Image 1 (cartoon, one colour):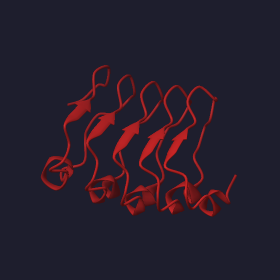
Image 2: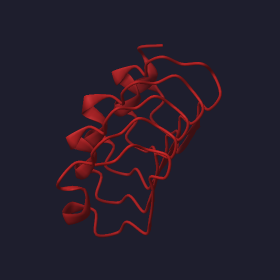
Image 3: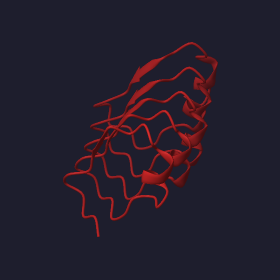
Length: 114
């Protein structure tokens, strides 16, 4: 639903294995969100405004059809884990490694990275 921003206190959101083809931009209006799991869906992209999730620590988006990560993901400076295994990503945002100094785990296996 497009009104997910009303979930102001949600810290963990698990939407895996739901055959989702898109995520509503309102997901990025949940200020307390720390863990987002959208693995095993049919997503081709993540919301462009994902960078507004300033408290996001872990992002799981494996086993989708993601072609790229939004540049705004580099604004999620608290990220420690990103898992985008088994997608269609050919490149990662240039600023990913520069901005995400807390990143401890970056899983990208199964992508046609160039």
